Amino acid sequence: MVTVASLVEFEGVPDIYPEVAGAIYNRIDRPDDETNGLIQSDASVTYGLGKRSYHVSDEEKRDKSNPYNTFAHPGLPVGPIGSPGDESIKAAANPDENDYYYWVTVNLDSGETKFAENFEEHNRNVQEYQEWCSDNEGRCN
Image (cartoon, rainbow, N blue to C red):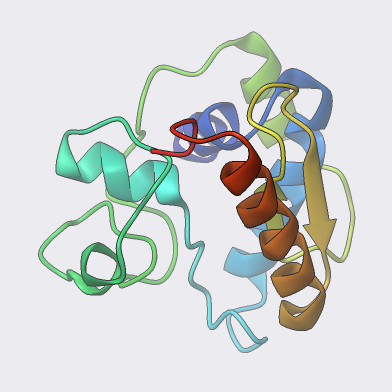
């Protein structure tokens, strides 16, 4: 639960912690669905790389030598990616029951995050994030 809480803390803002936790558990609990049990957390990959960044390259996502790489290894990373606070621990213990598999913060200033039940919907949300990055040069590095 602490590892999930740490992912929740770095992947969202307090208002959406329960939804993020629900999506993470969906990926873990339904490994045969379209995500194949991969959590695909940019925050866990960058933690394993020892850097702080919003951008993870395709090469970094394929790197199986990083034990925190949740793009390359199904399930939870080898341990927490930080010390979670009370709100993220509560969310990990009481996740939102939803059908989400994907989430992406589309505005890094406000923390606005969009959730999706399938990859097609998620790609539309990612496009919104990329447009925000284009409009806010230097913020998505």
